[in-house]
Image 1 (cartoon, helix red, strand yellow):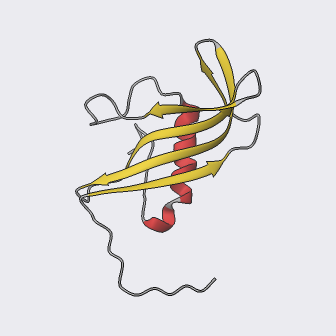
Image 2 (cartoon, rainbow, N blue to C red; image 1 turned 180 degrees about the vertical axis):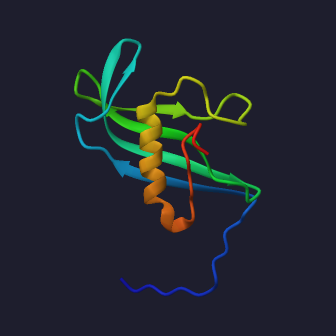
Length: 118
């Protein structure tokens, strides 16, 4: 591959987003929706920093296999409707996935604490 680059990239701080994907060990996380179990195998966590404020986890998109073995996607919104704090009722296992992703994203300056531990 013949590639060259010039310039000095700058991140726009008004609304910066980072997506972090992590693979999950099969069989370690089951999501239940409408009484059906889904085995999660990948998670894509979206973090955002609005106006250079602290980073916040906004959503997790899970790749899962349903009871029929077919792959589908499930999205979990992490912020409440006012977007000023975490959504109530999110299971601790999902926050653990977010924490794993934040640890992986440490190289881009994301620091993160799960709700209630800030």
